[in-house]
Structures are given as structure tokens and as C-alpha cells.
Length: 219
Ligand code: CTP
Image 1 (spheres, rainbow, N blue to C red):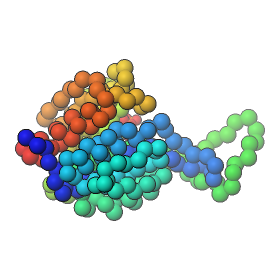
Image 2 (tube, rainbow, N blue to C red):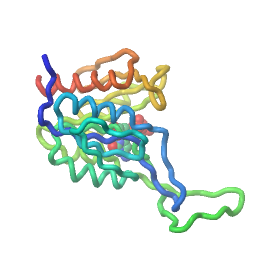
Image 3 (cartoon, rainbow, N blue to C red):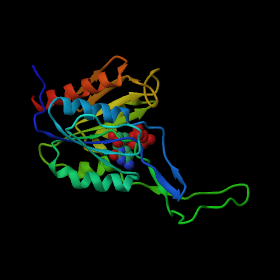
Image 4 (tube, helix red, strand yellow):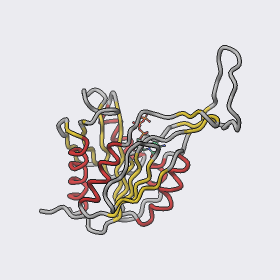
């Protein structure tokens, strides 16, 4: 059967966040945004209207049904997501949000002094968890987890903590999975189901995720 998301609003986060230290430096991570952008294209090609809230990446959304809101920091990503969430039927948190940000951002470039330096960090907002608290009846939400050990137990804990319906688990123990690869090997964990997939191209992985979401929405 054709898996159509006709007219359904899908909200996605993608890419890294950059947390400024001073006007020329930031704390970031190696996320390329490929998985999130692949999901956006896949949802759009199945008829969804996609809002893609994206951290800094080199990627360009192709499909006309994708609207990109570019953001830099976790706080900006959270604000954008909060504004768009009330209209979304499906929320997918694929961004690699920095867990911490500098407590103070220097307004001038920090000059070097002495042999060591310390930057005090404070926790960033957990966007998925915050949206989990305000989740409306009928909204379906999906998160990602990257684990090295106790994989499925940790993923299940995140499912509960963030009030998600589905969590896509990437194992760093699998060669070819994770950052900087075009391939990924995932296991999808739900409250009462676990589905393991083979190592595949990220575009095919996106299709597997979208298919399973479609099945759950039409169960
Ligand atoms: N997430 C988020 N906002 C954050 C941190 C994470 O929305 N500030 C989302 C991510 O987009 C992803 C999931 O939550 O969907 C990842 O959860 P997290 O607890 O960060 O897991 P890990 O990245 O695996 O990190 P850790 O286990 O070290 O906490």
C-alpha cells in the first residue's frame, strides 16, 4: 500500500548545535545532519509538510514541501521547535544537541593567559524531554540515541524519560554506523516492540523509520 502522509505536519530537528564561547569560538560536535535531512526528504516525498529546524550544516533541503528554520544554539532550536510544535502531528528529534553550553559568553575574543584555562558549562535544555511534557493527545514523537553499552536498557530509559513513542538506537559498536558515515545500522525500540535493521545507506534507513511511523499511525 502507498504510505501517504498527505498534508500531515512533521516537525524535525537535525544537525549539531553550536554553543558560543566568545565571538570567534564555540563548542560543537561532528553531526552532519545527514540523517535528519534524509528523513525530511523521505517524509516530504510521501506527502508530508515538513518543518525542519536545523543546526549548522552544509546540507540543502531539496523537496519544496520542506521549510527550513536555521538555528545555531540549543536555546534557539528549542524556541523554534516550541513555536512549531502545536501544529505538528509527528515530531522527530534527530539533532545532536550540545548537552552543555558555556555559563557566560565573552563579548570580546578571549586572549590566552597562563598554561591552562577553564570554561564553566551549564546544562542545555533537553528539547525532546521538554516537548515530551507538553505532548498533545495524538502527537507521535521519535528520538534518537547513540549508545556504547547497555544499549537497549538505556534507550528504553530515554523513551520513558522523554515521553517518546519510538527511539531509534544507533550502536557505536556497529562498524559503519554513526557520525561521518553514509550508512547506519539501527534498532527501533518502542514500549512493546523492538525491530532490528541491517546496515544500510542513510536514505534507506530514513525510509525504514518513516515506514514504521506510518504503520504505527495507521494501526
Ligand atoms: N535531545 C534533545 N535535546 C537535548 C539533548 C538531546 O532534543 N538537549 C534529543 C536528541 O535529539 C535525541 C535524544 O534526545 O533524539 C538523545 O538523547 P540524549 O539523552 O542526549 O542521548 P545521547 O545523545 O545518547 O546522550 P547521553 O546518553 O550521553 O545523555
